[in-house]
Image 1: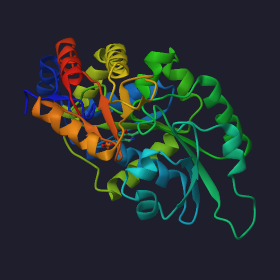
Image 2: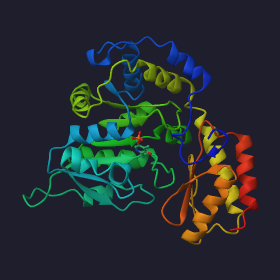
Image 3: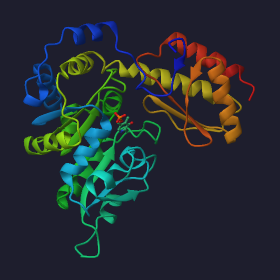
Length: 342
Ligand SMILES: *Cc1c(COP(=O)(O)O)cnc(C)c1O
């Protein structure tokens, strides 16, 4: 598979030589006993980065999100999130399965909703209604084509949450993509949230892992829930070492991925068979084709030319740029797309 240019997701990256070296030489211990120094260092580093008290290293972003939802809710409560959100669309109904909570979907712009929309969907104090217990925002929005919240938008939602005494969780699977693009600082963004989930295995390029950060009390509760979910692991320091390396070395380079995504957008703009493209903000390019047949045809054509992409709905295709997608590959993708006769 290695000869393929893989634009399906930023999760497909392999650890770099330098990353493998730090993984290989990591000092490890049994993390269930709290004795893995590298896991402890990663959790502390991630927490400090966002001005939070504590962190919890987990195998996936789905797990960190699901743990956060469980931390903040009781069965029968309601979670406010956008209709495009990962926690609603792509976590297997986990909100109901794990937390017994219901969902209130907002209709945002490419997954970005406003403080007014939150206010309009908080349930009043009436025994008929589920109790609103949590607000969740996703940043960047995967299904929205990698778009991000401005600091003002986040500050306003935070204000509403404070006013109504609601915790605010961020699914920051691609938060660093937003930060490098907006020049927001990690501490500034951290100050608006009760808990944040960050993925190390997306743009940051590690093989496995996500970190949940928050207060000491929230993370202590999260640690118990992770155990129940079967996510308490042992010598995870080998993976944590990759995470520390990625936070130190793979954040600022995300801008290169964004540049290449904009280059792909420019290529698509020139193609007569592309109907529309969601304006690129970070590393995700979602474009629409005239029909599902043409979409399938283009995907097959690209695959025959050793390029992989994801179908996104019936008439859309998604490209995600990442650490293992370089300028040479970019040129090849552009050439292949120009030659397509769909
Ligand atoms: C990838 C992703 C996650 C977590 O996915 P895992 O595969 O479970 O690590 C969460 N939220 C968003 C928006 C994502 O894109």
